[in-house]
Amino acid sequence: EKCTAAECAPCPPGSFKSFVGAVPCAPCPVNSFREREGAADLGDCTPCPARSTTQGAEGQTSVAACVCQADGYRVQVEGGAPHCETCPKGAQCF
Image 1: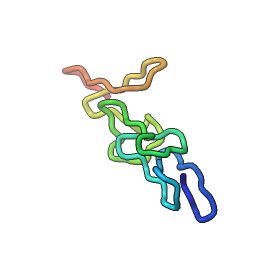
Image 2: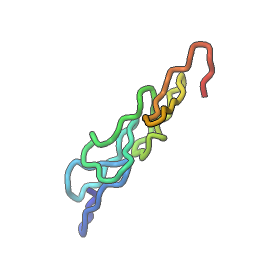
Image 3: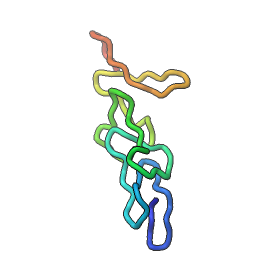
């Protein structure tokens, strides 16, 4: 929760707070994200899919912030989470 002298509110998406008090919410770390408000622990931040990165940015709010590494491309399977695959040898992936 994000607390001021007068009130407490859930931490916004992209952040978490492990305890109640007048300490600010912390951003989810690099290579992770949190889509909903109210994260109460670092473990509530979701890691980016394998072979993807937030390019050094913290406090991300969507899996869309996780981009494939230079040697990969994004695959979206219907009903599943997006993930990155390694670009086939000799191919150029964007």
